[in-house]
Image (tube, rainbow, N blue to C red; front, side, top):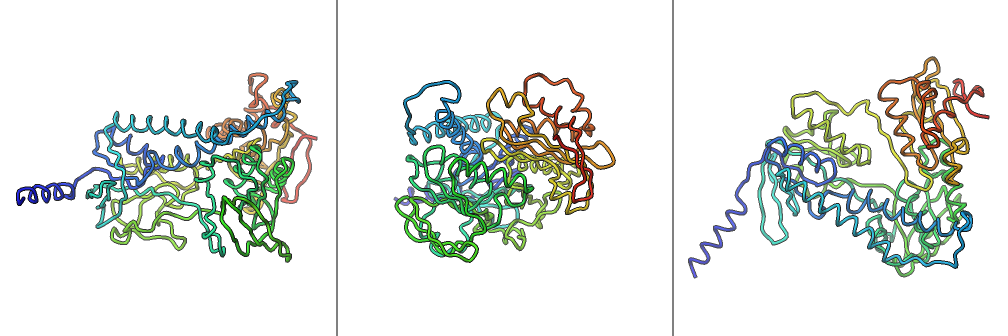
Length: 489
Protein backbone atom coordinates (compact mmCIF):
# COMPACT_ATOMS: atom_id res chain seq x y z
CA UNK A 1 0.00 0.00 0.00
CA UNK A 2 2.80 2.43 0.94
CA UNK A 3 4.66 1.56 -2.26
CA UNK A 4 1.58 2.42 -4.31
CA UNK A 5 1.22 5.80 -2.61
CA UNK A 6 4.88 6.60 -3.19
CA UNK A 7 4.59 5.82 -6.90
CA UNK A 8 1.46 7.95 -7.22
CA UNK A 9 3.13 10.92 -5.55
CA UNK A 10 6.12 10.58 -7.84
CA UNK A 11 3.85 10.58 -10.88
CA UNK A 12 2.12 13.76 -9.73
CA UNK A 13 5.48 15.39 -9.01
CA UNK A 14 6.71 14.42 -12.44
CA UNK A 15 3.65 15.96 -14.10
CA UNK A 16 4.01 19.25 -12.23
CA UNK A 17 7.76 19.74 -12.38
CA UNK A 18 8.86 22.76 -14.38
CA UNK A 19 9.42 22.14 -18.10
CA UNK A 20 11.63 24.50 -20.09
CA UNK A 21 10.70 25.70 -23.59
CA UNK A 22 12.14 28.23 -25.99
CA UNK A 23 8.63 29.49 -26.66
CA UNK A 24 5.32 28.95 -24.87
CA UNK A 25 2.16 30.21 -26.56
CA UNK A 26 -1.05 30.73 -24.61
CA UNK A 27 -3.97 30.56 -27.04
CA UNK A 28 -4.01 28.60 -30.27
CA UNK A 29 -5.27 31.17 -32.79
CA UNK A 30 -4.09 31.36 -36.38
CA UNK A 31 -1.20 33.74 -35.75
CA UNK A 32 0.07 31.77 -32.77
CA UNK A 33 -0.39 28.45 -34.59
CA UNK A 34 1.76 29.63 -37.49
CA UNK A 35 4.25 30.96 -34.92
CA UNK A 36 4.44 27.52 -33.33
CA UNK A 37 5.05 25.74 -36.62
CA UNK A 38 7.60 28.32 -37.75
CA UNK A 39 9.70 28.50 -34.58
CA UNK A 40 9.55 24.73 -34.09
CA UNK A 41 10.59 24.24 -37.70
CA UNK A 42 13.63 26.37 -36.91
CA UNK A 43 14.65 23.93 -34.19
CA UNK A 44 13.14 25.59 -31.12
CA UNK A 45 11.18 23.74 -28.45
CA UNK A 46 7.65 25.15 -28.66
CA UNK A 47 4.37 24.46 -26.84
CA UNK A 48 0.91 25.82 -27.63
CA UNK A 49 -1.79 25.79 -24.96
CA UNK A 50 -5.47 26.02 -25.90
CA UNK A 51 -8.43 25.08 -23.75
CA UNK A 52 -10.65 23.82 -26.57
CA UNK A 53 -9.79 24.45 -30.21
CA UNK A 54 -7.04 23.10 -32.46
CA UNK A 55 -6.06 26.15 -34.46
CA UNK A 56 -8.13 28.61 -32.48
CA UNK A 57 -11.40 30.28 -33.45
CA UNK A 58 -10.92 30.85 -37.19
CA UNK A 59 -11.05 27.24 -38.44
CA UNK A 60 -13.45 26.04 -35.74
CA UNK A 61 -16.10 28.61 -34.81
CA UNK A 62 -15.50 31.78 -36.80
CA UNK A 63 -14.07 32.73 -40.21
CA UNK A 64 -14.00 29.46 -42.13
CA UNK A 65 -17.11 27.69 -40.78
CA UNK A 66 -19.18 30.86 -41.11
CA UNK A 67 -18.11 31.26 -44.74
CA UNK A 68 -18.98 27.60 -45.35
CA UNK A 69 -22.51 28.18 -44.07
CA UNK A 70 -22.77 31.47 -45.96
CA UNK A 71 -21.90 29.58 -49.14
CA UNK A 72 -24.68 27.08 -48.45
CA UNK A 73 -27.03 30.06 -48.10
CA UNK A 74 -25.85 31.35 -51.48
CA UNK A 75 -26.67 27.97 -53.02
CA UNK A 76 -30.16 28.28 -51.52
CA UNK A 77 -30.49 31.73 -53.08
CA UNK A 78 -29.64 30.26 -56.49
CA UNK A 79 -32.45 27.73 -56.05
CA UNK A 80 -34.84 30.60 -55.40
CA UNK A 81 -33.57 32.42 -58.49
CA UNK A 82 -33.58 29.33 -60.70
CA UNK A 83 -36.27 30.62 -63.09
CA UNK A 84 -34.05 33.63 -63.76
CA UNK A 85 -31.47 31.22 -65.19
CA UNK A 86 -34.02 29.25 -67.20
CA UNK A 87 -34.17 26.31 -64.81
CA UNK A 88 -37.59 24.99 -63.80
CA UNK A 89 -38.10 23.75 -60.24
CA UNK A 90 -40.97 22.52 -58.09
CA UNK A 91 -39.65 23.82 -54.77
CA UNK A 92 -37.06 22.81 -52.21
CA UNK A 93 -36.55 22.52 -48.47
CA UNK A 94 -33.62 23.45 -46.22
CA UNK A 95 -32.23 20.66 -44.05
CA UNK A 96 -30.32 22.79 -41.55
CA UNK A 97 -28.76 19.69 -40.00
CA UNK A 98 -27.21 18.95 -43.39
CA UNK A 99 -25.84 22.49 -43.61
CA UNK A 100 -24.36 22.06 -40.14
CA UNK A 101 -22.90 18.62 -40.96
CA UNK A 102 -21.16 19.96 -44.08
CA UNK A 103 -19.59 22.65 -41.91
CA UNK A 104 -18.55 20.08 -39.28
CA UNK A 105 -16.93 17.92 -41.96
CA UNK A 106 -14.86 20.88 -43.13
CA UNK A 107 -13.81 21.73 -39.56
CA UNK A 108 -12.81 18.12 -38.88
CA UNK A 109 -10.62 18.12 -41.97
CA UNK A 110 -8.96 21.35 -40.89
CA UNK A 111 -8.29 19.94 -37.41
CA UNK A 112 -6.57 16.93 -38.93
CA UNK A 113 -4.47 19.16 -41.17
CA UNK A 114 -3.42 21.29 -38.18
CA UNK A 115 -2.47 18.24 -36.10
CA UNK A 116 -0.42 16.89 -38.98
CA UNK A 117 1.46 20.18 -39.16
CA UNK A 118 2.14 19.98 -35.44
CA UNK A 119 3.56 16.49 -35.89
CA UNK A 120 5.66 17.50 -38.89
CA UNK A 121 7.17 20.58 -37.25
CA UNK A 122 7.66 19.11 -33.77
CA UNK A 123 5.63 21.79 -31.98
CA UNK A 124 3.59 20.45 -29.07
CA UNK A 125 -0.13 21.16 -28.83
CA UNK A 126 -1.46 20.97 -25.26
CA UNK A 127 -5.21 20.83 -24.73
CA UNK A 128 -5.85 22.48 -21.39
CA UNK A 129 -6.50 25.70 -19.49
CA UNK A 130 -3.40 27.79 -18.98
CA UNK A 131 -2.60 30.64 -16.63
CA UNK A 132 0.50 32.47 -15.46
CA UNK A 133 1.84 31.57 -12.02
CA UNK A 134 5.06 33.61 -12.31
CA UNK A 135 6.93 35.65 -14.95
CA UNK A 136 7.13 33.64 -18.20
CA UNK A 137 5.80 30.61 -16.30
CA UNK A 138 2.42 28.98 -16.87
CA UNK A 139 0.46 26.19 -15.26
CA UNK A 140 -1.84 24.11 -17.45
CA UNK A 141 -4.85 22.25 -16.07
CA UNK A 142 -5.27 19.15 -18.24
CA UNK A 143 -8.55 17.33 -19.00
CA UNK A 144 -7.48 14.33 -16.89
CA UNK A 145 -7.20 16.50 -13.76
CA UNK A 146 -3.39 16.72 -13.74
CA UNK A 147 -1.31 19.83 -14.31
CA UNK A 148 1.87 20.80 -16.12
CA UNK A 149 4.13 23.78 -15.49
CA UNK A 150 5.90 25.37 -18.45
CA UNK A 151 8.44 28.17 -18.57
CA UNK A 152 9.39 29.86 -21.80
CA UNK A 153 12.38 31.91 -22.73
CA UNK A 154 9.67 33.86 -24.52
CA UNK A 155 5.89 33.69 -24.13
CA UNK A 156 3.22 34.80 -26.61
CA UNK A 157 -0.33 35.48 -25.42
CA UNK A 158 -2.99 35.06 -28.11
CA UNK A 159 -6.25 34.32 -26.30
CA UNK A 160 -8.50 36.37 -28.59
CA UNK A 161 -11.91 37.85 -27.84
CA UNK A 162 -15.47 36.66 -27.35
CA UNK A 163 -18.93 38.03 -28.09
CA UNK A 164 -19.89 40.81 -25.69
CA UNK A 165 -23.34 40.62 -24.13
CA UNK A 166 -23.21 44.10 -22.65
CA UNK A 167 -25.47 45.28 -19.85
CA UNK A 168 -28.87 44.79 -21.50
CA UNK A 169 -31.30 43.64 -18.78
CA UNK A 170 -32.41 40.05 -19.32
CA UNK A 171 -30.13 39.33 -22.27
CA UNK A 172 -27.79 36.90 -20.52
CA UNK A 173 -30.74 35.14 -18.90
CA UNK A 174 -32.31 34.63 -22.36
CA UNK A 175 -29.29 32.49 -23.36
CA UNK A 176 -28.83 34.24 -26.71
CA UNK A 177 -27.06 32.78 -29.69
CA UNK A 178 -23.60 34.09 -30.48
CA UNK A 179 -21.91 33.26 -33.78
CA UNK A 180 -20.74 30.00 -32.16
CA UNK A 181 -24.23 28.64 -31.47
CA UNK A 182 -25.64 30.10 -34.70
CA UNK A 183 -23.21 27.95 -36.69
CA UNK A 184 -24.44 24.84 -34.85
CA UNK A 185 -28.17 25.25 -35.44
CA UNK A 186 -29.91 22.12 -36.70
CA UNK A 187 -33.16 23.93 -37.50
CA UNK A 188 -33.85 27.22 -39.24
CA UNK A 189 -34.96 29.85 -36.70
CA UNK A 190 -38.58 30.74 -37.34
CA UNK A 191 -38.08 34.37 -36.28
CA UNK A 192 -34.53 35.61 -35.63
CA UNK A 193 -33.84 38.90 -33.82
CA UNK A 194 -30.26 40.09 -34.37
CA UNK A 195 -28.75 42.64 -32.00
CA UNK A 196 -25.94 44.37 -33.89
CA UNK A 197 -25.50 45.58 -37.47
CA UNK A 198 -21.77 44.96 -37.87
CA UNK A 199 -19.78 42.20 -39.60
CA UNK A 200 -21.22 39.18 -37.79
CA UNK A 201 -24.77 40.46 -37.54
CA UNK A 202 -25.05 41.34 -41.22
CA UNK A 203 -23.42 38.18 -42.57
CA UNK A 204 -25.50 35.81 -40.46
CA UNK A 205 -28.71 37.80 -40.97
CA UNK A 206 -28.50 37.40 -44.73
CA UNK A 207 -27.57 33.71 -44.46
CA UNK A 208 -30.43 32.87 -42.10
CA UNK A 209 -32.89 34.82 -44.21
CA UNK A 210 -31.84 32.81 -47.26
CA UNK A 211 -32.40 29.61 -45.31
CA UNK A 212 -35.97 30.78 -44.68
CA UNK A 213 -35.91 32.59 -41.33
CA UNK A 214 -37.74 35.86 -40.80
CA UNK A 215 -35.03 38.24 -39.63
CA UNK A 216 -34.85 41.63 -37.94
CA UNK A 217 -31.60 43.52 -37.39
CA UNK A 218 -31.46 45.89 -34.42
CA UNK A 219 -28.69 48.50 -34.65
CA UNK A 220 -27.75 51.22 -32.14
CA UNK A 221 -26.38 53.61 -34.77
CA UNK A 222 -28.21 55.49 -37.50
CA UNK A 223 -26.59 53.34 -40.21
CA UNK A 224 -25.43 49.75 -40.66
CA UNK A 225 -21.63 49.46 -40.65
CA UNK A 226 -21.70 53.06 -39.47
CA UNK A 227 -17.96 53.69 -39.83
CA UNK A 228 -18.11 53.15 -43.59
CA UNK A 229 -18.93 55.74 -46.24
CA UNK A 230 -22.57 56.67 -46.64
CA UNK A 231 -22.89 54.99 -50.05
CA UNK A 232 -21.62 51.73 -48.56
CA UNK A 233 -24.02 51.87 -45.61
CA UNK A 234 -26.95 52.62 -47.90
CA UNK A 235 -26.01 49.82 -50.29
CA UNK A 236 -25.94 47.28 -47.45
CA UNK A 237 -29.25 48.50 -46.04
CA UNK A 238 -30.86 48.27 -49.47
CA UNK A 239 -29.44 44.78 -50.03
CA UNK A 240 -30.83 43.38 -46.78
CA UNK A 241 -34.20 45.06 -47.14
CA UNK A 242 -34.56 43.77 -50.69
CA UNK A 243 -34.07 40.25 -49.32
CA UNK A 244 -36.88 40.78 -46.81
CA UNK A 245 -34.86 41.60 -43.69
CA UNK A 246 -36.32 44.22 -41.32
CA UNK A 247 -33.76 46.90 -40.43
CA UNK A 248 -34.27 48.92 -37.25
CA UNK A 249 -31.75 51.74 -36.86
CA UNK A 250 -31.04 54.26 -34.10
CA UNK A 251 -32.35 51.80 -31.52
CA UNK A 252 -31.74 51.39 -27.80
CA UNK A 253 -32.49 47.92 -26.44
CA UNK A 254 -34.22 48.37 -23.08
CA UNK A 255 -34.72 44.75 -21.98
CA UNK A 256 -34.98 41.16 -23.14
CA UNK A 257 -37.26 38.44 -21.79
CA UNK A 258 -37.93 34.79 -22.57
CA UNK A 259 -35.50 32.15 -23.80
CA UNK A 260 -33.79 32.03 -27.17
CA UNK A 261 -34.75 28.90 -29.04
CA UNK A 262 -38.26 28.97 -27.60
CA UNK A 263 -39.80 32.43 -27.40
CA UNK A 264 -38.10 35.75 -26.79
CA UNK A 265 -39.22 39.39 -26.59
CA UNK A 266 -37.08 42.50 -26.96
CA UNK A 267 -38.31 45.91 -25.85
CA UNK A 268 -36.64 48.71 -27.80
CA UNK A 269 -36.74 52.48 -27.95
CA UNK A 270 -36.50 53.80 -31.51
CA UNK A 271 -36.48 57.58 -31.93
CA UNK A 272 -38.42 57.99 -28.70
CA UNK A 273 -41.04 55.34 -29.45
CA UNK A 274 -41.14 52.10 -27.47
CA UNK A 275 -41.73 48.88 -29.41
CA UNK A 276 -41.75 45.18 -28.56
CA UNK A 277 -40.25 42.67 -30.97
CA UNK A 278 -41.05 38.99 -30.65
CA UNK A 279 -39.04 36.09 -32.04
CA UNK A 280 -38.02 32.49 -31.62
CA UNK A 281 -34.29 33.21 -31.34
CA UNK A 282 -32.06 36.15 -30.50
CA UNK A 283 -28.51 36.49 -31.83
CA UNK A 284 -26.16 38.94 -30.13
CA UNK A 285 -23.50 40.41 -32.41
CA UNK A 286 -22.82 43.73 -30.74
CA UNK A 287 -19.05 43.76 -30.31
CA UNK A 288 -16.28 41.76 -28.71
CA UNK A 289 -14.58 41.62 -25.32
CA UNK A 290 -10.98 40.45 -24.72
CA UNK A 291 -10.24 37.08 -23.12
CA UNK A 292 -7.95 38.23 -20.31
CA UNK A 293 -9.77 37.13 -17.17
CA UNK A 294 -8.28 34.29 -15.16
CA UNK A 295 -4.97 34.27 -17.03
CA UNK A 296 -2.90 35.41 -14.04
CA UNK A 297 -1.47 38.27 -16.07
CA UNK A 298 -0.78 40.29 -12.94
CA UNK A 299 1.56 37.52 -11.73
CA UNK A 300 3.51 37.84 -14.96
CA UNK A 301 3.75 41.64 -14.87
CA UNK A 302 1.49 42.03 -17.90
CA UNK A 303 -0.65 45.18 -17.77
CA UNK A 304 -4.01 45.83 -19.49
CA UNK A 305 -5.36 48.90 -21.25
CA UNK A 306 -8.38 50.78 -19.92
CA UNK A 307 -10.50 48.70 -22.36
CA UNK A 308 -9.21 45.42 -20.96
CA UNK A 309 -6.86 44.48 -23.79
CA UNK A 310 -3.24 43.54 -23.21
CA UNK A 311 -1.04 46.62 -23.33
CA UNK A 312 1.58 46.34 -26.09
CA UNK A 313 3.94 48.66 -27.93
CA UNK A 314 4.33 48.88 -31.70
CA UNK A 315 6.60 45.80 -31.57
CA UNK A 316 3.85 43.83 -29.73
CA UNK A 317 5.91 43.62 -26.55
CA UNK A 318 3.89 43.65 -23.33
CA UNK A 319 4.94 45.37 -20.12
CA UNK A 320 6.63 42.11 -19.01
CA UNK A 321 10.07 41.21 -20.39
CA UNK A 322 9.95 38.23 -22.71
CA UNK A 323 6.16 38.29 -23.00
CA UNK A 324 4.49 39.26 -26.27
CA UNK A 325 0.83 39.50 -27.33
CA UNK A 326 -0.70 39.11 -30.77
CA UNK A 327 -4.13 39.18 -32.37
CA UNK A 328 -7.35 40.51 -30.95
CA UNK A 329 -6.36 40.25 -27.28
CA UNK A 330 -3.58 42.75 -28.03
CA UNK A 331 -6.11 45.20 -29.45
CA UNK A 332 -5.10 44.49 -33.04
CA UNK A 333 -7.77 44.83 -35.77
CA UNK A 334 -10.07 41.82 -35.47
CA UNK A 335 -9.10 39.91 -38.59
CA UNK A 336 -7.27 36.61 -38.95
CA UNK A 337 -4.90 38.06 -41.55
CA UNK A 338 -3.84 40.71 -39.02
CA UNK A 339 -3.15 37.99 -36.44
CA UNK A 340 -0.88 36.36 -39.02
CA UNK A 341 0.90 39.66 -39.62
CA UNK A 342 1.26 40.12 -35.85
CA UNK A 343 3.14 36.80 -35.87
CA UNK A 344 5.49 38.19 -38.53
CA UNK A 345 6.14 41.24 -36.35
CA UNK A 346 7.03 39.12 -33.30
CA UNK A 347 9.01 36.61 -35.36
CA UNK A 348 11.18 39.35 -36.87
CA UNK A 349 11.73 41.04 -33.53
CA UNK A 350 12.70 37.79 -31.78
CA UNK A 351 15.20 37.22 -34.59
CA UNK A 352 16.91 40.56 -34.01
CA UNK A 353 14.84 42.76 -36.30
CA UNK A 354 12.87 45.90 -35.61
CA UNK A 355 9.42 45.26 -37.07
CA UNK A 356 6.50 47.48 -36.02
CA UNK A 357 2.75 47.31 -36.57
CA UNK A 358 2.48 51.00 -37.41
CA UNK A 359 1.58 52.02 -40.94
CA UNK A 360 0.52 48.59 -42.20
CA UNK A 361 -2.39 48.04 -44.55
CA UNK A 362 -5.53 46.58 -43.00
CA UNK A 363 -7.72 45.14 -45.75
CA UNK A 364 -11.05 43.58 -44.90
CA UNK A 365 -13.93 41.82 -46.57
CA UNK A 366 -17.53 41.51 -45.41
CA UNK A 367 -18.81 38.21 -46.81
CA UNK A 368 -22.31 39.22 -47.65
CA UNK A 369 -23.58 38.38 -51.12
CA UNK A 370 -22.40 40.48 -52.86
CA UNK A 371 -19.25 41.11 -50.84
CA UNK A 372 -17.95 44.37 -49.45
CA UNK A 373 -14.18 44.85 -49.47
CA UNK A 374 -11.95 47.80 -48.64
CA UNK A 375 -8.28 48.63 -48.29
CA UNK A 376 -6.70 51.98 -47.51
CA UNK A 377 -8.61 55.20 -46.95
CA UNK A 378 -12.36 55.59 -47.15
CA UNK A 379 -13.80 58.95 -48.14
CA UNK A 380 -14.82 59.59 -44.53
CA UNK A 381 -11.28 58.95 -43.32
CA UNK A 382 -9.70 61.10 -46.03
CA UNK A 383 -12.01 64.02 -45.23
CA UNK A 384 -11.42 63.65 -41.48
CA UNK A 385 -7.65 63.86 -42.07
CA UNK A 386 -7.91 66.71 -44.54
CA UNK A 387 -6.45 64.61 -47.35
CA UNK A 388 -7.41 65.82 -50.83
CA UNK A 389 -8.21 63.11 -53.32
CA UNK A 390 -9.71 62.26 -56.69
CA UNK A 391 -12.65 59.88 -56.60
CA UNK A 392 -13.13 57.23 -59.29
CA UNK A 393 -16.40 55.30 -59.18
CA UNK A 394 -18.29 52.98 -61.54
CA UNK A 395 -21.30 50.70 -61.05
CA UNK A 396 -20.75 46.94 -61.19
CA UNK A 397 -22.78 47.02 -64.39
CA UNK A 398 -19.62 48.43 -65.99
CA UNK A 399 -17.86 45.14 -65.21
CA UNK A 400 -18.80 42.84 -68.08
CA UNK A 401 -18.03 39.66 -66.14
CA UNK A 402 -20.62 40.72 -63.56
CA UNK A 403 -23.18 40.90 -66.35
CA UNK A 404 -22.36 37.34 -67.48
CA UNK A 405 -22.98 36.17 -63.91
CA UNK A 406 -26.25 38.15 -63.57
CA UNK A 407 -24.65 39.78 -60.50
CA UNK A 408 -24.57 43.49 -61.32
CA UNK A 409 -25.45 44.92 -57.92
CA UNK A 410 -22.93 47.31 -56.37
CA UNK A 411 -20.03 49.52 -57.38
CA UNK A 412 -16.27 49.97 -57.45
CA UNK A 413 -14.58 53.13 -56.22
CA UNK A 414 -11.05 54.32 -55.64
CA UNK A 415 -9.38 57.32 -54.06
CA UNK A 416 -6.29 58.67 -55.84
CA UNK A 417 -4.13 61.48 -54.48
CA UNK A 418 -5.20 64.89 -55.78
CA UNK A 419 -1.80 65.93 -57.10
CA UNK A 420 -0.41 62.58 -58.18
CA UNK A 421 -1.25 59.08 -59.32
CA UNK A 422 -0.87 57.09 -56.08
CA UNK A 423 -3.90 55.04 -54.98
CA UNK A 424 -4.98 56.01 -51.47
CA UNK A 425 -7.88 53.62 -50.99
CA UNK A 426 -10.23 51.23 -52.72
CA UNK A 427 -13.74 49.98 -51.95
CA UNK A 428 -15.73 47.33 -53.79
CA UNK A 429 -19.31 46.31 -53.16
CA UNK A 430 -20.05 43.58 -55.63
CA UNK A 431 -19.53 40.00 -56.71
CA UNK A 432 -15.94 38.88 -56.04
CA UNK A 433 -15.14 42.14 -54.26
CA UNK A 434 -12.46 40.58 -52.06
CA UNK A 435 -10.55 39.22 -55.05
CA UNK A 436 -10.79 42.50 -56.96
CA UNK A 437 -9.54 44.39 -53.91
CA UNK A 438 -6.47 42.16 -53.65
CA UNK A 439 -5.33 43.19 -57.11
CA UNK A 440 -5.54 46.87 -56.14
CA UNK A 441 -3.84 46.21 -52.80
CA UNK A 442 -0.88 44.57 -54.51
CA UNK A 443 -0.58 47.62 -56.78
CA UNK A 444 -0.66 49.85 -53.69
CA UNK A 445 2.05 47.76 -52.00
CA UNK A 446 4.21 48.05 -55.11
CA UNK A 447 3.63 51.80 -55.29
CA UNK A 448 2.19 51.56 -58.80
CA UNK A 449 0.24 54.52 -60.16
CA UNK A 450 -3.43 53.98 -60.88
CA UNK A 451 -2.59 54.27 -64.59
CA UNK A 452 -0.74 50.93 -64.40
CA UNK A 453 -4.07 49.25 -63.69
CA UNK A 454 -5.93 51.40 -66.18
CA UNK A 455 -3.51 50.44 -68.97
CA UNK A 456 -2.97 46.79 -67.99
CA UNK A 457 -3.86 43.97 -70.38
CA UNK A 458 -6.24 41.98 -68.16
CA UNK A 459 -8.01 38.79 -69.17
CA UNK A 460 -11.49 39.22 -70.60
CA UNK A 461 -14.01 38.62 -69.18
CA UNK A 462 -12.88 38.63 -65.54
CA UNK A 463 -13.99 40.62 -62.53
CA UNK A 464 -10.56 42.20 -62.06
CA UNK A 465 -10.90 43.56 -65.59
CA UNK A 466 -13.40 45.98 -64.06
CA UNK A 467 -10.46 48.02 -62.81
CA UNK A 468 -9.91 49.25 -66.38
CA UNK A 469 -13.28 51.05 -66.68
CA UNK A 470 -12.92 52.20 -63.07
CA UNK A 471 -9.60 53.94 -63.61
CA UNK A 472 -10.60 55.10 -67.10
CA UNK A 473 -13.65 57.03 -65.89
CA UNK A 474 -13.39 60.67 -66.88
CA UNK A 475 -16.45 62.68 -65.78
CA UNK A 476 -15.22 65.15 -63.16
CA UNK A 477 -16.82 67.29 -60.49
CA UNK A 478 -15.84 69.04 -57.26
CA UNK A 479 -16.80 67.41 -53.98
CA UNK A 480 -17.42 68.80 -50.51
CA UNK A 481 -13.96 67.81 -49.29
CA UNK A 482 -12.34 70.23 -51.69
CA UNK A 483 -11.01 67.41 -53.85
CA UNK A 484 -11.49 66.70 -57.50
CA UNK A 485 -13.97 63.86 -57.92
CA UNK A 486 -13.77 61.67 -61.01
CA UNK A 487 -16.46 59.10 -61.67
CA UNK A 488 -18.35 57.49 -64.47
CA UNK A 489 -21.52 59.15 -65.65
